[in-house]
Length: 54
Image 1 (cartoon, helix red, strand yellow):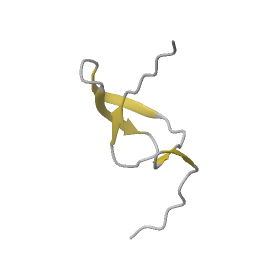
Image 2: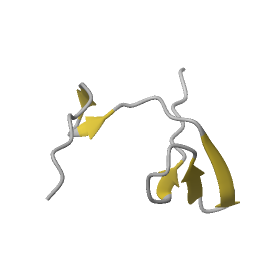
Image 3: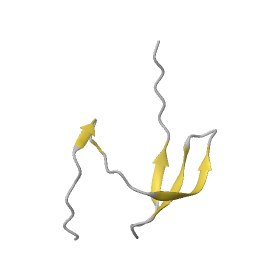
Image 4: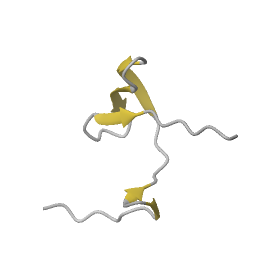
């Protein structure tokens, strides 16, 4: 098992880490897709989240 340092928690069990990646494919209707991370990490699943203010 790899020993990785986890970035700070954002909330709801989520972690935030700034990365550079190239979009492999993204379905705008469903709001998800995959990106290829440029640091050699495995491809990452990407989910779009939108918040609307009133």
